Length: 505
Ligand SMILES: Nc1ncnc2c1ncn2[C@@H]1O[C@H](COP(=O)(O)OP(=O)(O)OP(=O)(O)O)[C@@H](O)[C@H]1O
Image (cartoon, rainbow, N blue to C red; front, side):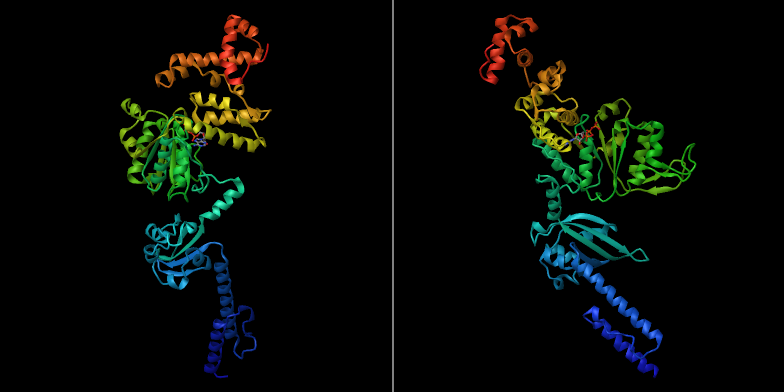
């Protein structure tokens, strides 16, 4: 056969394959009269057609909305879920730029646009004002680079937020207010000061400025740091934590900056990345920053200024992009006055100060937090313990020097050791039932109680306790060293009032 005729036959065949709608019944190529090399070309075209069919099926049957653009943000492809969730027909969006979609409120902000600007993979919540809040979706846009480092494609996939709430409901039975926290860090409060702090934390999560969290031990500084990270655009990247008080000074430098092979005796042969390097593009949480030695404070300041580090024993400078959240229970300003903390570093770290109030100033949160912990430990221990009203009253009066951690630990112990399903006043430790002298003094200082209030409180507890134990006023009088009539009067005052009539002795 003539070469030209052969080529025509093959070209016709290729056209047929490409136009074939039903991939399962593509034309057979074995009986086409042509040389072997052309036949294998036809087979390759068939294979590509089939592969394209598979990819289309994958795209169209994906549960996520899929959206593909070129490097300029011009939309090339979207799938059926995209059409369904945005209400936009594909022919209306394909060929247009993502800025059009933003201007038309189809999706805002365009994660593709931000991804092209920042030249990195981004995950963010993308709102869909035109289609309504039900279609707001968590969207990941991934840039694909060509050999010259230019963005060639941006592939985005999005899943509506209500999908995550379904999963949440499945595991937690009930929804609560904290679903906006993607990986489940919950921060809620009934205390107005704390509520405004949570709102601020939410807002400032988006910027990369340094945050300094202050507050007494156990107030939730680490939790707040994680919460900020979770709501930031860095949430896809690492959250690296260093407790400056928990690591010896001699190790802290290599821990933070890493080291090159053979930098010091005992250094591992291949060298090691430091925490700052590990946190590249992410968040570095420096807990107990007040314990960072002065020499390292100077080095940390350099990192913040130059955005570069050099490993211990190395000379190469490595670029780093980190956000630092630091926390302390110490008074850094006093430390600056005593030359224990560098003022210049303090200003760098403290661009956004967040002060966590102690639990004793967030009394509105004591009951909800107790309920939350009891529910959590009930579920861990397969129990259904509840807290009595009187016990709550005690918890509310206590000074909570150990803050939320103390409350959490106490509830863990009380639930685990509980036998009758009821946490009563007398199950609480003595310091909570009676308070201690310093608690009383603090209350007086803060004008939350007067001396007579505190004395009466103490007396009430002592009488109630003794009566509960001995069940009659004679014994109470004897044990407490008071007259029987005095004991009777006090029992009438403190026990009868709350318990109804005194039992006949
Ligand atoms: N708002 C909150 N809701 C529920 N649990 C909380 C809350 N805040 C703190 N906690 C819990 O209290 C405990 C102490 O919190 P965290 O470790 O964050 O405090 P901290 O201020 O960093 O303590 P430290 O100063 O000792 O490092 C943790 O177990 C944490 O999960």
